[in-house]
Image (cartoon, rainbow, N blue to C red; front, side, top):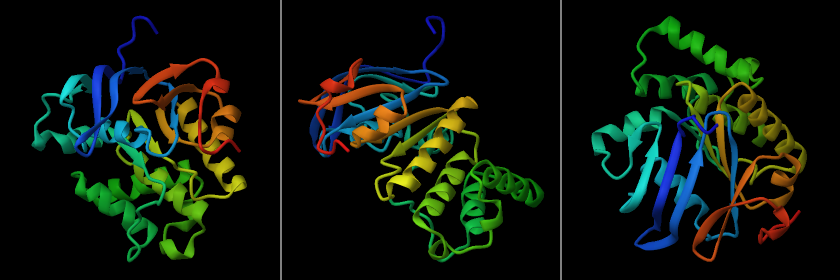
Length: 236
């Protein structure tokens, strides 16, 4: 690990949420193959950190790089290329409800430059296989359970073979059993080499499925070695 170059790195970075600094002096390195949790109470700055990673929020002080892009210097026209190196999974799925599963995935591929029909079909089949949803390709999102919709959202995140998957509360709207299935899927993808950065305020998740844990509190975010020290709103 000492000689590895981090996929994501922050040094003395101030993280903004809107017009206000929510995290001061963030230092964080995330490497290939890492499974990293960013945890903390609601409003503690967790989501602002990942919005900075995706260049949705600008980085104005300190240093930050994501998949080779300098967040202080990145130009607007280069932001889509940064985001193609990432896969993002949201709590509320954000599927297009008027399109089938297959059409949702095709839309993303065509939006990111894919043109060959056969290659598009093959890639859609591959990612649906990866998440155990191959037989659901022709379903509409409203015909799927919450857990199935989240699996499709993860498949969408995999389309362009990202180096990192960033998941913002991916189990937040799911019951415990369904959340367990989503966590096992993320761990499988991680074991295959994809780094995972997951925001959560559910202690039971990161205590059951071990990874590196960064805790946000008191306008700072630091790596923790003991989950007992982590103060959250939700503990079960």
